[in-house]
Every structure is written in structure tokens, then in C-alpha cells.
Length: 182
Ligand SMILES: [Zn+2]
Image: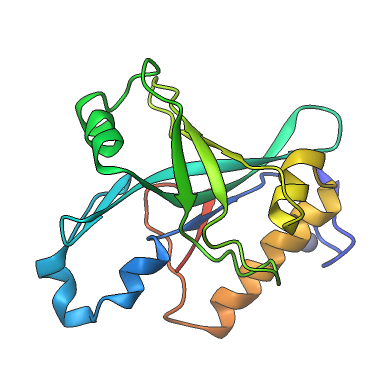
């Protein structure tokens, strides 16, 4: 149980924040998406030319091994994407280079196209995403960790955003412990 400094409530389970699709998905006109995009909860292909996989960026919280998760999309080269499809739940592939393909709105400095390495885990787990060390705030949080207070600040940012944009976020139904954001 954590007594929150931001809202004054006590919190227990910490949700992850998930981007529903790579940002490139939203660049395709809604009426063209069925024809041009193939997507599952873990993969996305646009025009048979752009290949994305879903992974998790884990920010360390404090010193006790806790982590805060951002579910994000990474663009892989075609060959690596196809290897992933063929070895979907394997930890024997990769790691592969990926471009981060979401602007994480909590961060004022854009996170789009940060360089990452995607590590595959198998056992039903999504790949984990290693962010290149730069002075981008997401990279700093990934490498240096965040406080529990900041984790809740991020969560409240998205709860607030989903409230103010009724169409902006909806739970995918896949996990009650996720806040889904476009
Ligand atoms: Zn709170």
C-alpha cells in the first residue's frame, strides 16, 4: 500500500501504460486501415513495408527491483520481424535493433525514433526494450530509474488524459491492469 502524494489516495497495484498501436497506425486514414494494416496485439504491418512489434520498456523504481512498464511499439527490419513471427514465443532470437515508434505523451521531449534493442523472452512474455543511453528524458529514466512518486505521477497523467478525451483511451480488455493510450 502506498499513500500517494499526488491524489492523497492509497494505491496498491500499479498499472502499466500501453500504446495501442505504433503512431504510424494513426497516420493511415481510418477508412484505409482495414486494407493497409494487419495487426494483432503483438505485431503490426503497414502496407507490407513497415513492421512493428510490441515490447515493454521497464523503468526501475527505487532500489527494490520494482519496475514500471510502458508498452510500446518498435519498428524492426523485415527479416527480423519475420523471424519473430516464426519463433513467436522463443528467447533464442535477437536481440534486434528497433526504432521506438511512439511519442510517449508524458514526456515533453519526443520519444519517437529513439534507438533500442529488443530482447525476446519467450514464456508468454512480451519482449523487453533496452533504450540507447542518450540525454532524452525517457532514456535517463530507463538508465537511472524513477521514484515511486514519479511512477504514480505518470499513471495519473494518463488517467487524467483518458478522462478528458473520451475517445482517447480504452482498455483493450486483455488486462485490467493496463491503461491503454493511443
Ligand atoms: Zn494517486
